[in-house]
Amino acid sequence: MKRYSVFAVAKEAFRQHKGWDRAWANPEPKKEYEAIIIGAGGHGLATAYYLGKNFGITNVAVIEKGWLGGGNTGRNTTIIRSNYLQDPSAAIYEKARSLYEGLSQDLNYNIMFSPRGVIMLAQTQHEIRGYKRTAYANQLQGVKTEWIEPKRVKELVPIMNIEGPRYPVLGGLWQARGGTARHDAVAWGYARACSDMGMHILQKTEVTGVTQENGQVTGVETSRGHIGCKKLGIVVAGHCSHVAEMAGFRLPVESVPLQALVSEPIKPCMDVVVMANTVHGYMSQSDKGEMVIGGGTDSFNGYHQRGSFHHLEETVRALVETFPMIARLKMLRHWGGIVDVTGDRSPILSDTPLGGCFINCGWGTGGFKAIPGSGWGFAELMAKGYSPLTADFGLNRFTEGRFIDESVAAGVAH
Image (cartoon, rainbow, N blue to C red; front, top):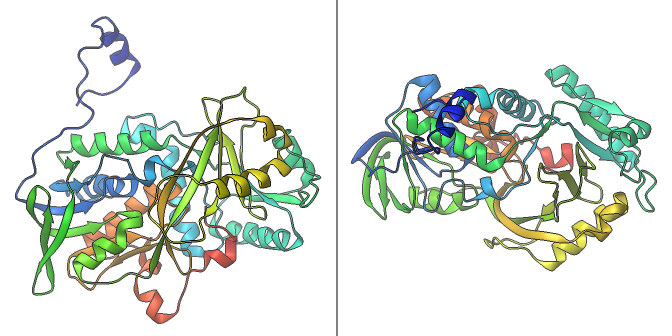
């Protein structure tokens, strides 16, 4: 595969850019692979990439019923942070954040990583205590965060009204090395690297069943026929419970819609990410000038991928109190994604009752930020049967009662 560089761009400019190869191949499926990953989103592609890079397992197929990156990977608000309270959470998210910093060079593909910083606003006394506690925990975990006072918040975000009518800003938890990245580019970069290693990315291929023999996985039934494998990774976000049922086990997850929207583009006015958990809204500004806005999940289970008026009303009303200038902006587009939520708001990265079958799900609203760390740990789990990054996120924690309760620790799982 041709390497992307300024010299390659200059060379192709003289040939009307006719010499570029396809970013990834579109092969016919083989009869059998060493490993199959169901789901060509960020987590699935990252798993395949690190299987090849870290463990030399390249006889891999990534199967996607739709198009590459067409699920939650292409429907999120691109926030990257690692300031979690619980040790297992901080470890996997910090691994992901650190990998994001060098991912463009690693993949030879510009993922547009922007370490602009993330502020989590404290607007109640309870949040002040909670975020200071998190800052102390992060110091012990080696995650660089700090508590900042309202004056510093205003310096970082001049457009913010820190003396809001209902919830004034009392400070914030600041992670200077958090930020954003281009969600599509993350999927495309991983896909290109996987294809370059000889892996097969099979789009428009729906999995309709999981085959097994004597308690061991043997392959999957698809819309293109049976495909055999020795190891199977299920990485399908909101549809994980359906695929798990095909494999013969149940998951402690619920699938709910999560909505987001972007405004019309305006001149640069905000160069950090702001999260306001009390009013439950968060916002950043994209490279194109759009204000990227999101809030909490819908209060009901569902599989729709569209917006609704109540979300607009609740989320935008909350943010207008803190950012009065956005009140006159027009909405450009509005959408939803299907997220899989566990009882403790932490993910599942685990082996399963079916031998050779592994599951990566339950990321809820925090999936994008975890993609490199998730792929790194899940690939190690599939290749070796154990990973220190994923050890605490096994299915057995729900029967043993050792929850990683980020819903209580963080108040929100974005």
